[in-house]
Every structure is written in C-alpha cells, then in structure tokens.
Amino acid sequence: MEEEEQDEETAMDGLLDSRVAFATFYRDRSVADTKSRSRRFLHSFGLQRDRTVQTESFESPSQPEPSIVQQSIDDKDTHASKGDHPHAEPFTAIERAYTAHAARVTRLETLERLHDALGSLIKSFTFPRELDFARPPTKGEAGVVPDLAYTRRNVGFREHEQALLRLLSEADAVSSEGDEEVRVKRKEFVEAVQHELELLEEGRLRVWQGQMAGV
Image (cartoon, rainbow, N blue to C red; front, side):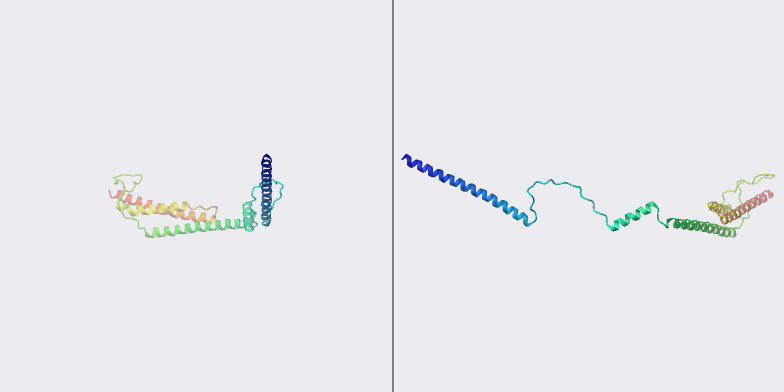
C-alpha cells in the first residue's frame, strides 16, 4: 500500500515537472517570437536601431537662411546707411540748387505782389477834407499835432494807414539771402510805402493847420 502511494506521488511530481518545463518553454518561445516580430516591424519602416545605446545631442534649431530677395534688401539698406551711392552727392547738389532757385523766385514774386497791392491801395484812396482830432485847436497854439479821434470821419484815413503798415511788415519778412536783385526790389518797395506814410502825415498836418486858422 505504501509503495503504491509513493508511486503515485512520484508520478504526480513527474507530471508537475513536465508542466513547469512546458510552461517555461512556451514563455521563452513567446518572448523570442515577440522580439522577432518587433524587429521585423521596425525594419519594415526603417526604424531598426542598433542595440548599442547612443547619446542624443541636443542642438539649438538652426536659423532659416535668408532668401535672395531679403539679402538684396539688406544690401541696399547697408549701402544707403553708409551713403556710398555713386550719384548721391550730385543729386544733393542739384536739389540744393533747385531749392535755392525756387526760394529766390518766391521772394521776387512776393515783392511783385506787394508792389501791385500798394498801387491798388494808392489809387483807391482819397484823402478826407476833414479830420477829427483828439482835442480841438485853441487860438495861438503851436507844437505837435494831436492824435486823431476814433470817429467815423477818420475811418478812411486810419484804414489806409493800417493797410500801408501791413504791406511794410510783409516786405520786412522777405529775406534777400544775399541776392542783390531781391535786396534792391525790397528796398524800393519799403521806400515807396514810407513815402505814402509821409504823405498821410503831411495831409493830417494840413488839416490841423486849417482848423487852427479858423479859430
């Protein structure tokens, strides 16, 4: 009886060992098949790597190379900043000459316009026969002529005087810039305006003297 039990235990141990061996064989074969399939899959896509471990280097992304158009623009900007354009100086000289000529023409045209305005102003003015002064004359009075009063009778005289002073101020604003023709024309105009102002003062004196004579 004991021998039969030992035989059964021996048989069970042998069966157990065979199952363990089979399981180990199947596991190793499965792992090998899995690795083989993985290598074939990676190889089909060109992704098969060496088994040796390689250290990857991390490099900063390279900057894109400038296009031909951008290089051309940069070159032009560089040349422009250095001022080495072969025709830059001649163009600048021509521009300066043209600007000076245009300014001279403008000054002469301004003086001509002022001369025309002065002529029109003189033709349209008629000296008043009577003027109102700030104070009435007294018998035996002599000396400086008093200022004009701010009355309606004196409006024409005052407006003409103010118009002459405005023309004189505009002429003073015209600079000759060393140009002889501009200087001469401006001087002639200023003298003409000053002459008209002197005529106004002489007329005012005559009116005052007339009023004194009637006292």
